[in-house]
Amino acid sequence: MTFPLTDRLSVIGAAAFVSDVSESRRLESVRRDFVANVSHELKTPIGALGLLAETVLDGDVDDVTRQLAARMVREADRLGHTIDDLLDLTIIEAQETPVRESVALSALLAEASERMEESAEARDIPIRISSSAQGAAVVGDRRQLLSAVVNLVDNAVKYSEPGQPVELDTVTRRDGSVGIVVRDHGIGIPVGDRQRIFERFYRVDEARSRQTGGTGLGLAIVRHIAQVHGGDVEVESTEGEGSVFTLWFPGAQRRRLFEAS
Ligand code: ADP
Image (cartoon, rainbow, N blue to C red):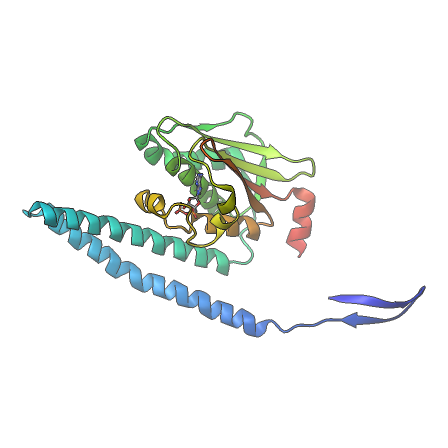
C-alpha cells in the first residue's frame, strides 16, 4: 500500500507499507495439504467399514445385530459425506482464482434442480424454477457455482416439510449485481443463528442435521465459493415460514475491478 505525503498543497514524499506474507502463505498451504491428505487416508477405511456393515446386514443375523449394522452403514455414509465436503472445501480454498467462464444462470438452476430431483421427490418437495430466471449470466467456475446452488437447494429440501415447494429465481440489482435466489417455506432459522450458520460445523439443531445426513459444512462451502467469485451470500428467514438464500455476484463493472485485483 502506498500513499503520498503532503505539506498543505505540495507533495513532499511518499510512504509505502510492505508486508511479507510468504510465511503465512506457506503455512496455509501446509494446512491445506494436511487436510487433503488426511481426508484421502480416511476415505478408504470408512468406505470399507460401510461395506462390511452392509455385508452383516445382508446376512442371517438377529434383530439387534441388524439394527446395529444398519446404524453403522448410516454413520459410515455420513462420515464419507463429511470427508467429501472437507475435501471440496480444501480444493476450493486452494484455488484462489477460480476458472472464469460465462455461466448462464437458467442452465445452472436447471442442472441444480435435476441433481436434487430424486431426493426432493422422495420427500415430496416440488422444485420450481421461475420463468424470470432467463438471460442472466455470471462469470466464474461452473463446477463451483453448481456446487453452491446444489448445497442451497439440498438444505432447502432438507429443512422443509413434504409438500412445501422450493423456488429458484434470479435477480439483478441496479448496480448490475446478479443474484441467485433459493427460497423455501420450511422451518426457518432463528435470528441468533443466522450469522453463525456459515461457520464450519455450525448447526442450529444438531439432532435434525444428523437425522437429515447433514455435515455442517455445506454453507461454509457456499460462502467460500461466493467470496472467491467476488460475491457474497445473504440470508433472510422467518421461523416457521421459511428462508431465502441469495448468492450475489458482481456485475460487469465491479467484476472488472475484482478481476484486475
Ligand atoms: P448441514 O449439513 O447441517 O445442513 P449447513 O452448513 O448446510 O450444514 O447448514 C448449517 C445449518 O444451518 C444447518 O444445520 C441448519 O440448522 C441451518 N440451515 C441451513 N439451511 C437452512 C434452511 N434452508 N432452512 C432452515 N435451516 C437451515
